[in-house]
Image (cartoon, rainbow, N blue to C red; front, side, top):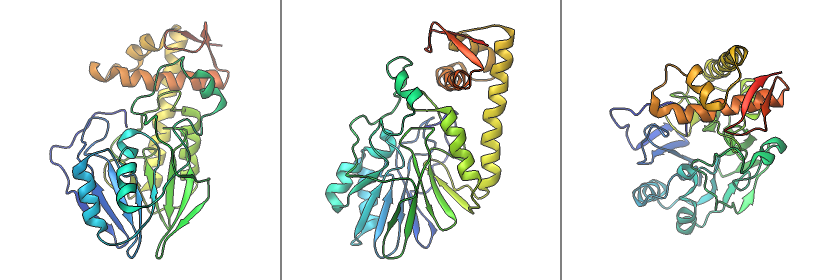
Length: 301
């Protein structure tokens, strides 16, 4: 899920061979939050890993099974448990017999700060609350097949249980890094402090290509990461400037900061702005009266 509305006028091909060992199968769920749809990736030649099965859609399941053919599936890997990525897991597991692997359930990986905010700041958009993997995988763990090896990278921010998967000089980035839009960071599932840290973890690498959960391949990862980090830092400076002018609630500050955003997208912008405000409180730059929440009045210390 992302913060920017951009639906392509022409739907890309459903199946694309990105590399000899990587096939993308596009789910039929285009929307302002998913671009042309969710990208499901098949990794391997003789035996497969499936990354992000996608939404619970029978057409998508049929297309995946057609591409899988008679090849065994070793693992179903989930970058994070938003419904557009994880809901098809049970049906695909039933058809292939493969275990579902992820960092953990939908509450896994939350920071102590975000855990305390559960039930106080809204959120929960698109979360697959019933998601439970067959096995949790740790940061740095390697999942292997006959002709592939994927290294799990714990990259919280968009969600606490978000993983990227690295294979050679390619990283499957889920919803952390996309080329067409920035990611939605909606507390308490989204955490801006963690998001920035995860972006910097990827920026320290020297990968050739990112394959995101939505949109096309990113062929210049370093430049895209620099753009995303700069965008968030610039937004934070805008919010600081707005707070210098006057304290405000998240909604009031959103109307002042996001003056170039369509009115229908302001609720999404407000969720992102709240994430920035919480980060400012975490770093002791701001305070919330009476406490952090959608109705709180935020001011600089």
